[in-house]
Length: 439
Image (cartoon, rainbow, N blue to C red):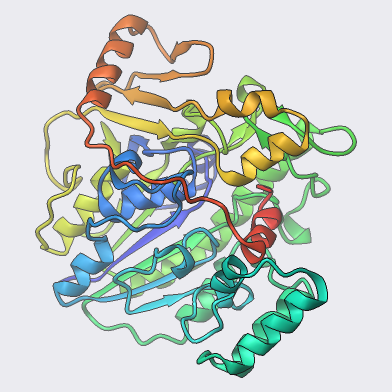
């Protein structure tokens, strides 16, 4: 067996990666594509090796509740110790992304979302309609009388009341290093990390800040909201500052990982819109700045540049191949010469908070339109075409009609899992979403 680490640099654009991560050794995949525009469906694909629509985990159902085994479950069954640290609220045990992990850690600020011993605030909020003093009285009573660990639960409640449940200071990398320093890794280990330095609110230490911290982009598609003037140049530079900071900090962490792990796979789950098509963030659509992602595999003498078209689906199979574990998902091993491939990317509607945002800002008539499913298609040669509300866009000289036709064919072959819409989130999750610029 070998040891391997899978590191997701959340929201890192491919072009920003190219500018700041020249130092990262390994085999670089220039035409790597995500399966989705945002975290939850992209991680579902990464963990289970299928498209989000097939797994039923996306904007309309954020829980990883599919029957397909996760990569951690498969590796643990094969004898691996499986560990994780996630700075992203959406990739925690709260949404069942801890399936198969022996040790799944999160920053202490959001520990109440991931600890089975802490009172289940989600269940309580779903069961009670009480408000104000009555709500707090019932909550305190249930915490004390439940089987949950009382003191840790009260600490979590105190943090919530004081507004301290706002994630991490800069993105999670500092907290991840602290957590990893306490672990004695063995020889048969799988480690997953999600780090948020490139994600809104685009916050970096003062020594890396070249502009003032911008206001949240607060965008849904090409509609963005907020008080005052939205400063596009400031926001774009703030994102660039984040990429610079992430590169420097990850270089130190990567060195530590290479001392422990035989392989380190570094990638982004999705990118970010920085004004393309007059849109910001990553809550809507499948434009190429959202779906074209960095991917590097380090280990066993791997180097050079690969120009094959690849997908996050292939990362799943590659991890299993490195670990010498059989699996039956989509994708191929990126360590082997393979047939040329073509892939889809998917946008499967608005999240509940995006719908709420449109409603609150007087765009109810846009909700149905923005809930329309959109997909992209990347060819074997790397040509990319994608649907928008108004048209089909091709990124090069490929025939639009040919790309559209092949996309429709691939979609017709999907084994889509029908799910009931279950994407509303309770107050403690909304606090995190606000901190990340979603809600």
